[in-house]
Length: 228
Ligand SMILES: C[S@@+](CC[C@H](N)C(=O)[O-])C[C@H]1O[C@@H](n2cnc3c(N)ncnc32)[C@H](O)[C@@H]1O
Image (tube, rainbow, N blue to C red):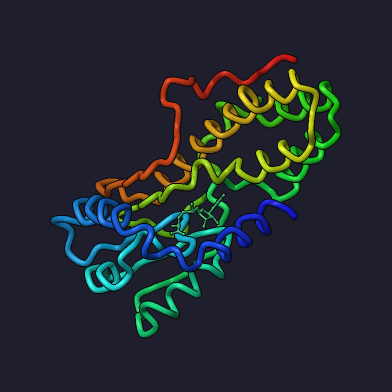
């Protein structure tokens, strides 16, 4: 298992949940439509599209000139498009990690947690977090969009590492520190990177729609170190 595989397994398992998300889809679309208001033939970038359960694909495809869907698991988005708007010509699906973090970096953190060694864990987290705040927007955009939508991906950025933590069975105090300090800080930092990268794809007079499942706006992102 790794970060990508974890996401694609979840997306595959959740494929048939479209009807569970009716209310969530309704308010997500309300925000997207508001952001598109007044823009003729908007171009839209959707980040974290997955199974597209939170998007009315038919409506979006009718109203927009062009839509780009981005995810690290593009297979799920391909399935949704094929099933729900098979004839749409204004859709592109791109495999992109919005926090621009190498798979080996995710795995390095997982390996450190599995080591159960406090010093190894501390040094790994500090190495990642010390990039704050110099590492802001790392993706060079190849296009700019009228509307950029971030779907609820923030909790997903560290979901795999939480899974690794729960399997690792660390001593209680170390577990608590990783669970309550290190991973939340990493989640906040990666959410911040995702927002910055999303902003860099947004036209100067465009709109960013951020549907968040979690982000601690009170936790300063510039607190890089945690001590064991
Ligand atoms: C909770 S789902 C969002 C709901 C999704 N729109 C749906 O209806 O299935 C989070 C999505 O974010 C994607 N994701 C997680 N980390 C990502 C990353 N670093 N870059 C791009 N997409 C990511 C996952 O693959 C997943 O499809």
